[in-house]
Length: 418
Image (cartoon, rainbow, N blue to C red; front, side):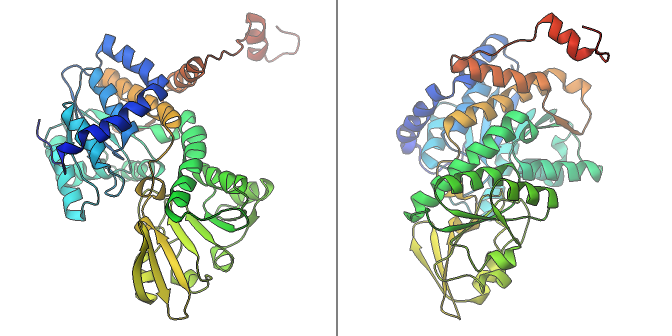
């Protein structure tokens, strides 16, 4: 199988990373056993476009255990770990990716992965789906469907459905309860601060953290900031979420006001131009900015460069910009996903649930694609609850079940029934 990678000699280091996460992903281990028995992807090809690190590598192995020929490609050039990619290739999984790929290389890698003519895909952010529809229309009849990992990708898919251009079914894994309640909240919350702290080596306690966006990811980032001892300010456009943030104990204000107070700024919106030059000039010297949304559009780096009088690398993954007023502002990981571009991403135990959802959702598509139309589907409730139950089982926990009397009571409309 053809691959495009940096250095196969890095494989032993990558294999160590994979070996570390495997015993900590017990739900995926149980799914793997099912796949080995049932072979739901026998004779099929799967392209996986995700952040290429150890947890993703194990997902690729699990999909292959289900009988698939698997190829992986990066969903973000700065989150690719070359040693992990090398380990995958050494184990017979195709890969087209390397760290810090240029835009041209990144797009070329997507094309090389699609040259395998996949039957199914797993996407993160919608780049693979978009590329297929815009540059590889000959594959539209072959691809039977897939699953999408993140909020940004799901939004793009819904836009495609609205415009009538989506040509195959996609499962919105991001919208599953076992995804947004755990991965988005606890995974993002922990990994974002892990990326910030390991990159800056600065204290969080006693400082002000400005968090743009109070969706599930923003809630997780805010919760961890509070736990680390920070003052937390939330910037929102949704009045309901703003009230929720207020009642969760956080301050709420527009970014134009919050810009004056922040020591750390974290964008978690999935939208563009959240922090721009009108905010940069208000920030105090030493302010640190980073992004936890999928694309590097939330902090307007072009405008930051435009108003800066000097720019330098202050530390690995930290760029210092000096403004005309003398204040020095710092941007982490070039404004890309800080938890992956400057860290290892979500904890293995959290991604265990998310990638189990991915694997089982892809199996659902493989078994039912002939009954599915070209639209966005929610994760089947049975799959969502199965993952949750497998997680409890992996922890040695059990829960109560309704009795027949209780089931009858809940199903009745009269207080005299049951």
